[in-house]
Image (cartoon, rainbow, N blue to C red; front, side, top):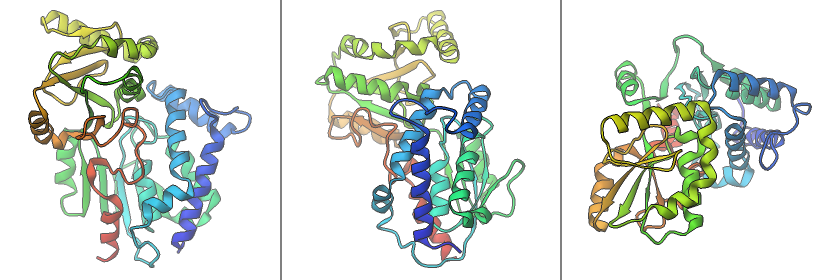
Length: 350
């Protein structure tokens, strides 16, 4: 059985491999990594949302997260040195953004458990490639990683991510096993009216990265009375190229047509629709907004929707993340606020 230090060292080396796949803004030459180039091209063909830019962004975040100092900072509060009875952890992965299931993959293996992963059809190439590289780095992981194409079986616990509808199915189906079940969540931003152009540009990144498909993407804005959207629209003009992406444009056009036919009021800059709506989640190409009167009413609304909110972005005291940080969480920013490592550690004692 691998020791904690062996497991950690392997992931550090994997991070260095990932870093070698990318330069500052794009992927490195396919001649250097022909196997990955093949995987990338197949992924892009199977899922048009997985543009090279977005895959590169996801890889860059993981290359940074897997640096030894970041792993040490994350794991210092857990006792992972002790030998455990490894459990088989079934993981049902989402596929909304590239490598969205990697944190569960990392958490399971770094804790000393084995993983049986059910990949989403939308993202079934990237993680197996990285798993193959990890096994080359540390062959001891070979017996710990399995990708299941059919029904999950022989698992001791479950981590499953899906929509609100599938979550209800997961809750029932996996009710007799220890589990973490995740539902739909989104990011929100709180604006004060004191934001700079740079703040709005960073907010644009929080909205548009991965075409808004991530659970941390900002889908709703909380704004004060008499907020003027002009500066916001000017600042996010740099993202207007999104309208040339076929799938994004189709969603934007469809939602705009629906709102026009239903006489729904909205603001529009020809690539993003801003609409007043109390709902947290919004369609692709649309961001909801809600006016708040004071901090008390804002806090009340945030509390009311706390089970739907993944992160709160902005400069307001109630915000946990700065503008531009929605898709750059650290390793301890657990999805839905559920500590995955702690969950996995409890299995070691049962």
